[in-house]
Image (cartoon, rainbow, N blue to C red; front, side, top):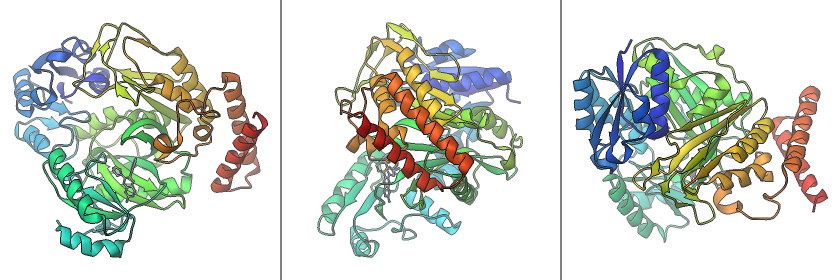
Amino acid sequence: MFKKVLVANRGEIAVRIIRACRELGIDTVAVYSEADRSALHVRYADEAYLLGPAPARESYLRADKLLEIARKCGADAVHPGYGFLAERDDFAEACEEADMVFIGPKPSSIAAMGDKAEARATVIRAGVPVVPGTEGMGNMTDEALLAKAPQIGFPLLIKATAGGGGKGMREVKSLEEMPDLLQSARREAESSFGNGNVYLEKLVEGARHVEIQILADTHGNVIFLGERECSLQRRHQKLLEEALSPAVDDKLRKAMGDVAVKAAKAVDYVNAGTIEFLLDKDENFYFLEMNTRLQVEHPVTEMVTGIDIVKEQIRIARGRALSYRQEEVRFNGHAIECRINAEDPYNNFMPSTGRITQSLLPTGPGVRVDTGVYPGFEITPFYDPMIAKLIVWGETRAQAILRMRRALEEYRIVGVKTNIPFHQTMMDSHRFMGGQYDTRFVEERFSMDEAGEGKQSHAETAAILATLVAHRETERSANIVNRNERDASNWRWVGRWERMHR
Ligand code: MV4
């Protein structure tokens, strides 16, 4: 067993990792920047050390300082959390060289999935479906890309090989506009990642973003923990996640899970990881990329499986076998996570900074809040605006939505603006209730004040959802329609309800 784990992160995820260690009887070491002297992760850890000034570059990204602290305090493992150094193969390597266990995958797996074009080529060889593109052609010149583009067809996407998060991504509608877009994509990729290489993929329109959580141990066991629906995002920042996805049935889940396991095995993966897929309207799914880390939204998977993913990560890193076999993974109920950000949803989601003067957290049955802030803590512009994750569980999706609505009402934060009103409007959205949304929904179809999308009473929402629940129950007992038809009829029912109340 590890005696002492250094948590190389801040905020809610550092607190989350410290909690898992505490329950396992492992001592914890926090590191912090000058802006985080009074942060919660510093208070909760057994020991804490200053890294440097507030900017991440001078604190949480200082791999040399982190390892020096780890060595001096006698830590035997490092948990990187997400962001910062979590997906840097050179950091994982440096941990190993310092005789420190990196609680994550091998450096070679991180590197293999870090180059998105190489990742595509690798998973294709393992039989994983990808969107048609320039796979297997190595780093290409503009001439080669322009020659290949008509074969792929338009519209297509230019993507950065070092990419992720949509940086360096460009939509191309015709060959004529492609040279300029190539240049600007390369420029953006170069400035964001120090690497201007790009590749091409056919554009899949109106798809959902569905990702599969996997766990892999050092004994060759790889299992999947079902999917998360992550389509509700704005400018490539996820805002709300659900487990399981309203768009995935048991058969599709098994198909996607088996493919995710193949992708993980293709890079000899160990520890927790996530395979991202695009899922189109006809239930075709395509590998996008693999995240070789613990993810922000892991709690929704924990809530429906009962599996503590962080504890499994630690167990795996100690060389133990997974606690669960695939057939022991069961899904119970539905979970939703709202990311609570310090930003103003009425003003283009502008970041909001300042001291939190009051904070009242929602509690009660089926409610979990993962946060790194408390009254008196100051939100600075140095880090991510996410200050908490509000996660609820319900026996059904409808009950989870009603519970989230209740929890959002209880939540009070004074001192900074938050996106809680955005989530409240989302809970009232008929499209959201019907599970009818894709990755364009927030940016193209959703409005904070649109009539019909929001502004009804709790009683009205409860009535809609109760009817959806009753409707689904009836169907389940009658067992006469398949999933697609069932979704359509749910949606028809919501339409009828809207017309009745006009
Ligand atoms: C795509 C796509 C459509 N077709 N690839 C965006 C970030 C990066 N991880 C991949 N992304 C996309 N790749 C093809 N061939 C649409 C997106 C995309 C997206 C994906 C997941 C979640 C939100 C998204 C929002 C816009 C575009």
